[in-house]
Image (cartoon, rainbow, N blue to C red):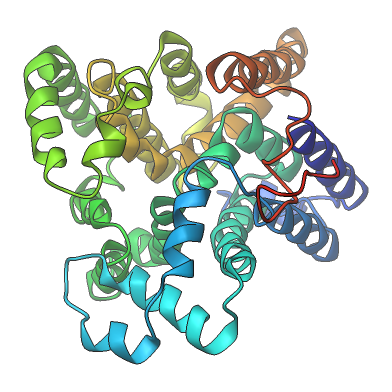
Length: 375
């Protein structure tokens, strides 16, 4: 736990020192790119975050990928066996690093961490309007933890961020190839084919009602459909992992409440904030999908795995709404209260759900079971 705390404090201090005024011309119009941090300080803070992320060892699914990388075949052999829709691209990626860059598993994890963390933080840097708060919520809401306990899916999620502009501009011929590439790393990324048709629809419009209706139906039917999905998963490489006790009990009421907060605040602010941000509808719809998949995971946490694609946008929607409230004197208490509540949620997750103590010998900054972490 101490690594999470120290890293968060250090990066927050760097972003605070690097704070710069937002372009007033941007504030006077519909907000698109809203940078409030100097580029050099953004880069420094993000490098530290990515580096620490890549120093994990016995955390989440990291050990499994360290093992996969150690047994990786040569690049030419893996490339010759490449097949579509079998997540072979990730094997090609691993074998390329193993063959041409380094056979050290730590190098593989570090490279993957940088590829994963940088697009996410760059997205926050460009669009959140409050990088410090976005980063803080990224950590406290569990997103950073998930990047280390869902390596391939978060890698695919970061790749999908490159499709953001194409999706907004409705350039399907650019968007779909990126989705296809991401799906060769994690097949579940194909859900973004559906997202193309709903992402830009009006917040709290007809599509919102349809999504909510379908989501409620999925939740109600989860005792049945959840078992069907689990049976399908049993025949894949995910069967053992997703049907274990961790995934049967993976979604609790606190997690659902955390995912619901941005949507509730957005509803309260719906008439005041919608036209202030150019990409508001997109971010809202992504956050709504996050909530729907979390709710659907009440009975079968396999569903909740999909929210790893959408929780990134949850953070942005939350930042926008908190800062909108914070502009009013009577709601100035909301921002510090939100920070405290999310910190308590983070402590609850780390200490009581994951049973991680202040110091752990093998979570970070160690490469084997024979030495102990210095921090």
